[in-house]
Every structure is written in structure tokens, then in C-alpha cells.
Image (cartoon, rainbow, N blue to C red; front, side, top):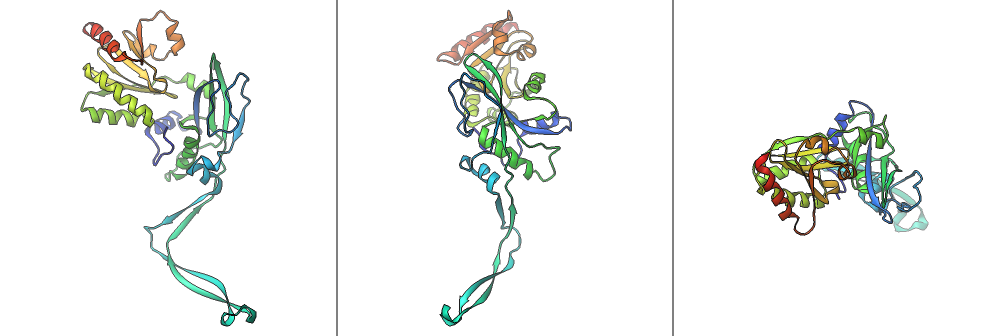
Length: 313
């Protein structure tokens, strides 16, 4: 889980562009098993009872950004010229307080500082859906942005407060609810040519902005897909779905959603349409595909399927 950003990530910039100059908010969607908790969200327990909508102020113990959100912070401008500052303190006359006191002033060269007040930004929690043992919740920073100013520090601060507490973040326009916005999105596919392995990995990381755990899994799984000599690679995003995979022909594609990456999907026809279906929709359909769960031996199974169908696609 990435806790903060030094600059606005590319996937967030793409989300903002998709808002078409409308006001937007930072949000996230989390799918949790019943009985689980999110440690930085006090009072949230995923149980059998519906979750009533509530808001919380991230606790200062969460981390640097939550602490700054409450108490503010300052920046020491070490690259700027130092300035002269006068410090005054009370001193006893002739070293004896019984004889009275007087003020003593001293001048010193100090660094300039900029003080930033805390924002006290809160996060709203809403239940979106229940599916068996899983509950999907929406989280939203209760602050609206009309645009990102040329000085991005204000937005980056808000984004980091949210990212630190929730562990993931995206952007959506304020005139749609979380669930309706996600359902309206289509996957934004990008095709990457095959090149040097490290450069390919770097490009995919830049596009998908994975967590350290996701990045490790992507690297390992792409190594297998690359060993089977694909025509090109694909990446895509839609809401919180993050897809990565390989094309071996016009119709033969192997890919997975790295947010819920427990299986590799190999599709043989109309893969762009099928990839927009949920796992449940896909499993209950008559569509032709192979689903290979990432358990021991999955690499051998994936290789066998791709090698079998590759000559015909």
C-alpha cells in the first residue's frame, strides 16, 4: 500500500481529465470480507448489519499527513536567503530578580519559514453493496476541487491525507454518486509495444501506479507472459479496476485485474467486451474463456492454454 505521493500520479491526472472540467472529489472503493476492519477508520466493522453512513477525522496517529491535517505544519526555506530576527527575553537586574528586571534583545540570522494551517478534512464512509461474505464500501474526502491550481500543493496535500488513511485513491466528478460513476466507466485500454523487459515494466508501473505488493506480482506474472512471446502488451483502467496482460493475436488475450488479481483470464474472442463484465457475470455466462487461479502450478496451466490456441489466433 502506497501511503503518500510526492507528485500527482498519472492515473489521478487521467481521472481528472475524465471529469471534463467539472468539480471533482477524491474517493475510493474497498471490497472487504465480513469480520474485517480497516485499521485507520475508527468504528468501522464489517458485519451482518448494514453500515450507516458516517464521517471521521483521520487520527493524528495515522501518520504524517493526518497529523498535518489536524495541527498544520511549516516548511523551512533553506534555499532562500536567511533573514535577521530579533529575540527578546527578560533578564534580572545585576543578576538579582529582587532588584527588578529588564528586557534583553539579540539579533540572529534564521531561515525563513512558511506556516500552513491544518485543514481538518474528513472522510465519509458509505456502504455500496453486499455480495455474500463481501461488503463494498465507498470512501470520499469531504472536500471539492474545481480544478488543480498551478501550485499543486493544496490538492496533493488533500490527496495524501486520503491515501494515507484509505490506502488507495481516485477522482470522480461530484455530480454522480460513486456506484453510478463506476458503472458508467469503460476500460481505457492502452497498447504497449514489446521492448526491453525493464522498460516495459517501468511503463506499466507508471500507468497503473501499483502498490509495492501489486508491483511485485505484476513483475512476476508479466515475466511469464513475456516468455510466451506476445505481439504486444495491454494495460487498462476503469474506476478501481487495473488491468494488465498480453495479446498473442487479434483475439487471444491473457490478462488480469491487479486489484483483485487472484486469477488470469485468457479470452479468445471479443475480449474488450468480456473484460467489462464482472467476475460473477462472466462465470455465469456461456462465453468462451479460461480462468486460471493463481495457485501452485498456474504457470504450467497458462502456458499450456496459450501454446495450444496461439497458432489459431
